Figure 1 (tube, rainbow, N blue to C red):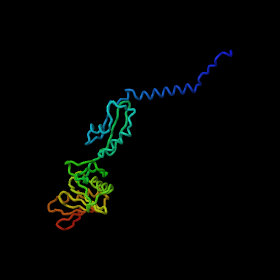
Figure 2 (cartoon, rainbow, N blue to C red):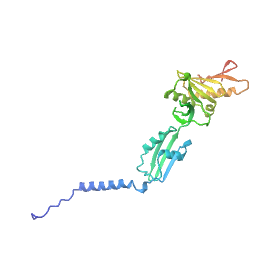
Figure 3 (cartoon, rainbow, N blue to C red):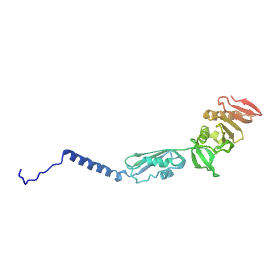
Figure 4 (cartoon, rainbow, N blue to C red):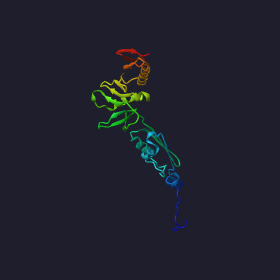
Amino acid sequence: MRPDEAVVHRPGRWVVALAVCVAAGAGSFALTYTPVFRATTIQVEGAGSIGQHRLQTLSGVRLGMNVFRLDTVAVERRLEEDPRIETATVFRRLPSTVVIDVTVRVPVARIADGLGGVDLVGADGARMGAATNGEPLPELVWAGGRIPDTTGTRLAASAAAAMSTDLRGRVRRIVTSAHGSIRLLLRSGVPVSYGPPTALTAKGQAVEAVLRWASLPGRAITAIDVNVPGAPTATVAGTTTAVA
């Protein structure tokens, strides 16, 4: 080689490979922003009383959004901020579909909101917003006028949730005492001693069994006791009677 000849260094193989990877990565990243991933379908499941259109609005997901880049966790969090929604799951079906699947709380009771209004309450004790004049639901109240805490509300709501729809409609109030025992007041005016918030499904069924028993002529009951749901009793004309 003559002294005046320049030395040409060729890039090593690893440099070439790195350049190819970078180019490929940049191309893939850019591809996620192409019209291929524009949302053309938004599938809403489990909207219940909220309604599909309203639920989609709450989610913030819109047609034309980039499905690939959608933050599904953020959408789920936004939906679950609504007290009517218990759980939300959002996922993609690439290239252009977003699926929104929610579990809507079902109201099981009512409770005073402290401002002169009444809120609906879900089975988990969550307040669902202002009640309307819909189906009759039991009112949750506390003996002595004390203000219920979250745990107390949840326990009282669980008693309502364990009842059948028919029985809930026949209960005017669910009263919780300071030590946690429960008493019902039926819309007929008959009080029901429930005792501690245990075996709630069995106690609800026992109340229904007593009411069926009392539907026969000559059985005008004035009180019911289901503290022991396997052996409920009813008071008829001042006499306590075991109900088989």
